[in-house]
Image (cartoon, rainbow, N blue to C red):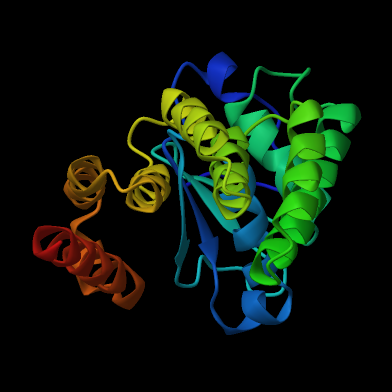
Length: 236
């Protein structure tokens, strides 16, 4: 594997697409903040890029360390979110423009707005969350747009804006057809609207994309709620 401290070329110029970035979360890199880097890369990554954690990549103390695959390019000293964004955009963006300081700033600002919005959603402040996510989308950040649309659909569902939620879900799926989470929200919207057949289709599509959700307690709770709604409808 080759090793560099700074990415010198974009994925496009190398002629080979980066398909996966792995972040070392072993002891030394973990102390240097690799979990924050993993979260940042996951949030900003384009839909086709897989971001995951891995074991030690060597040269402990010069991290957090990453590896881009299939090139096997080791990237070191990725210690801040801005550094993570620079590396991501250099590897997977449209060259110099995507990795510019303004692109990095916009992406990190959008990420901060999104994280704030998620806190508002957890607190039940859906209109505040929707406004924050709209601000994030207006920045047109590179990467992560599909996630922002999905989060805004959740906020709109909480506001009982079903048509708006479905529109954002469509936007998310147009950007990332194999992204399972919008289908969950889509199913939730259809349950709220009493369209149980459509809800079932959405949940089944979600399972086709990510079968591991069968073991998820929140997903099981959704299925149980849907089944209960269907029973209640049959009784009436």
